[in-house]
Image (cartoon, rainbow, N blue to C red; front, side, top):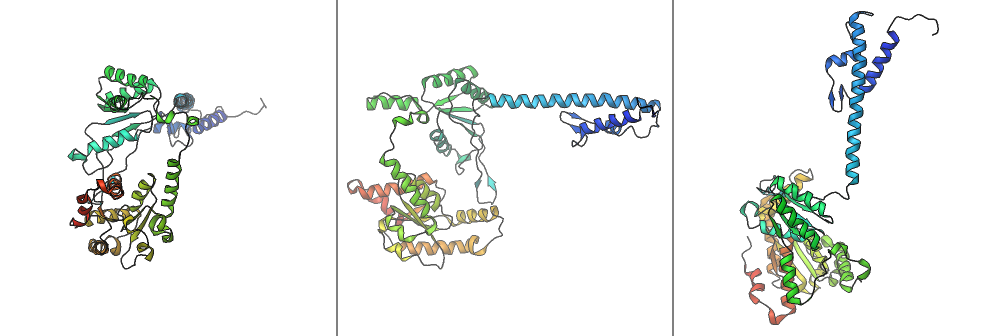
Length: 412
């Protein structure tokens, strides 16, 4: 066009090479959905080894253009496929939530998890925690999971509202040969589960229906049939129990780890124990049930605050744990924090001395019940404490053996 004669193919070659290499820029010779061979990469550089104007060079140039177009086409198809997948996910009403399990710390210093021989799917129209807790408790009756708190293939599907969600989950359960355990109060959802399980031949357990039917007969009342999470909030008034719980949780949070001993006089419960005996999670659990709980860690060589003896001694509960279990917990804690072994913290001999010092303190105060938390869940420890409190408040129904048991037991 400008009257200048250029060697044939020189500019077009550069343009073709530029386009081809731009298409592959940042992929290191790989385009999503397609591998690029060394020969093709060589073509993108202009077909090294061929002379200008040669038939080989011309063939490489036209082959280069064909490959460039093919790469572009595959790249665009891949982008369209990804976009379609995103759109499909966005169209879903909500993702199905599956509980993730945390490995439990054990004596050998390694993480260990309970893998069931077959999965269990928990389905709920609310949080699913009641069914999940029941399943975990039932699994405790099987030796393979007796000492492990969280199976890796116990899946919880929460807040289900549509029948199609039920069929999707049951279809997946059929593929994985899973057991369905469900707590659904709506009749249509319950029928959907029954129909889906029958269709896909999946075993299921209804944890609510029999209980609710018996309660209807016993109470002579009709059930509402509406999931707790979907009740009309405007029709419910927040009563004194709710505000008592909020106050208790706030108090418990502030009184953690021996803080503010001057406020212990307001506590309903004060927990004592050496480090890593589960004082904080137990305190929080009790606090969520409306009890104001403080806790105090027992540190070797450090005297307890004088305020401990100024409060009602019947509010104090002492915690003990097996030294080997405590050694394992502390060792794993240091490992997770990236800290090397500390003889004053995770040495088994020091731990025994620390527990012996704590037991001597407990023996000097026999009114303090001693709770052994070895291999015991927070719920069980809390239940023991609340039972003792209940028995003290109702002497006519007190079981003396239950109270004497704690101080008569041989604790390691």
